[in-house]
Length: 305
Image 1 (cartoon, rainbow, N blue to C red):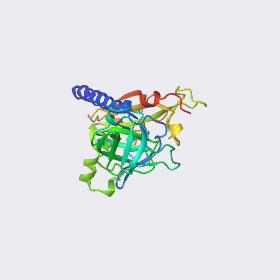
Image 2 (tube, helix red, strand yellow; image 1 turned 135 degrees about the horizontal axis):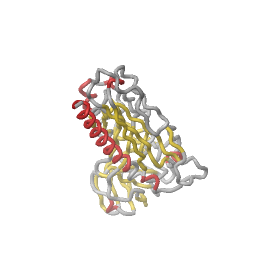
Image 3 (cartoon, rainbow, N blue to C red; image 1 turned 90 degrees about the vertical axis):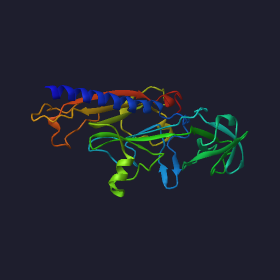
Image 4 (cartoon, helix red, strand yellow; image 1 turned 180 degrees about the vertical axis):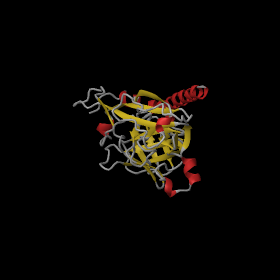
């Protein structure tokens, strides 16, 4: 009884802390990217590493290796600059690596920026660049992209957050896309490298389920109509994702020789929680933590389409 009680307390703490940390990132999702034209674009983070279909929050992104069986992955993207989250207008381009902007004081050295042309290209492939110097009105970057006059320069700050969350070996883990290539599969690198990429956040978190809260009205009315896992395919569709419904399942670490759990845990979402990949799943007790996290930086844009 003592082990059951203390184990239940551990599950309660682990689940609450894990959900709080994940929800905190989701609430920031999209900061610095508050322009519908950016949504769904591919972004070259550095040589050989591309973030496909950039969005504030992505469920089961194709590039992210799947987690434990019957669990979801969540990719969160946001910046931390002090400038306008809707970007700064580029008035001219003195050189390929120099953008004259309306408010150069919003940028400082080592800020990470993305330049978008005035007309979004059909194949939207952008580049994450870094500010080398600021001399009003010009912002000089390390590489630059030509043809950005009358476009927009978005500032993601000193350390943008591109975090991939996944359940791995019964733990909630996180991978920092800015530091490493989170798309690398486990068999492609050594065990030590893989463990260094996917850092444990909370132990005994055995399942994560997520669903988009989408506005399906035509035209949009900025009200969530459905929750599902249908990945948006256009910038307009991404701008209709106003929330993320999320569930984490924490497990009591104490193995019980009996089978105290005979029915899988449930949550409000339609995507079932399935623990049967572990043959001994019934020998543990579980706690479900769930929430609806608004993606505020998209909701504040209102109805865009």
